[in-house]
Image 1 (cartoon, helix red, strand yellow):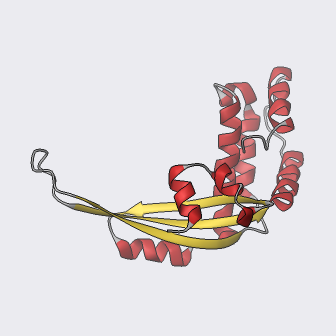
Image 2: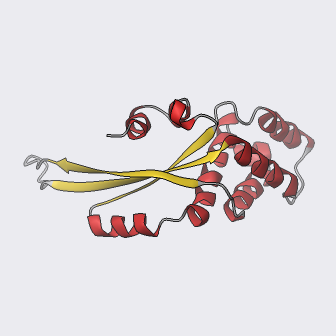
Length: 170
């Protein structure tokens, strides 16, 4: 099993990014699971960093903002939705597929629960992007968005607090 898969399963993205092999890069994992192998193979074959990375970037940006406060919709106002939407809609460049892996899980039958043996599949696609490139594109997004209604003064303070320390814990 590749080291990145082991870290992803048992640790965190930040631990993966601490590996020498990912020095200077942010790491993203696209994950899909199901009961049938063939549809997952088709998903993996059709995966495109250019088309699929914006969703991954937006999800990680959303998690970072949400981790900073208790009620992000209230504390960031319309900015919260605007940043997620813009990150999802932006054509990011520089993300590359750096590997993939799949895991087969076999669950034994449980006669007490009347459950038959079950097999599931989990597919992982590893993407990386240079940190400087990601930061510059995110800065452009921050500059470009114009949320409506405009955030209140307290919301602007909360937004600026997170933006100022955005990549700690990212």
